[in-house]
Image (tube, one colour):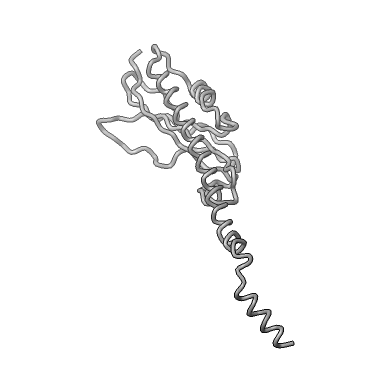
Length: 178
């Protein structure tokens, strides 16, 4: 009996059957991690590019406007209309417009004002239409749900209590004379 067990163990040790299965079992989780992270990064890039484009197009319209100064709700509506890939844009987008003096620069608050679905609704933080020839900074913050929130990149993103991450887009323009 012992001789049979030794022979069977020796044969098992020298056998190369299942070699590919072991490699697959070791490398598959890592490959799946990179695949899901790549898909998540693609969606983050898509959302951020659409937000950037929407903000740039809206700011361009404001700059080329003929003396009209659109208000907060109109600017938000235009950005949401142009940012097609942002879900629930009207509730997940927050705008901030700040007047800045280029000759006496004061840094703006580095933390963007974003929505948080787990907190009660807050009023607009700072939104003021500038005077003629005044430098204005428009900052938009959109909250996005990760595609794979428990895996790869989606798990390691900085998220709020509702599980959403923030995408921020800023643009500057000079308020045209009226």
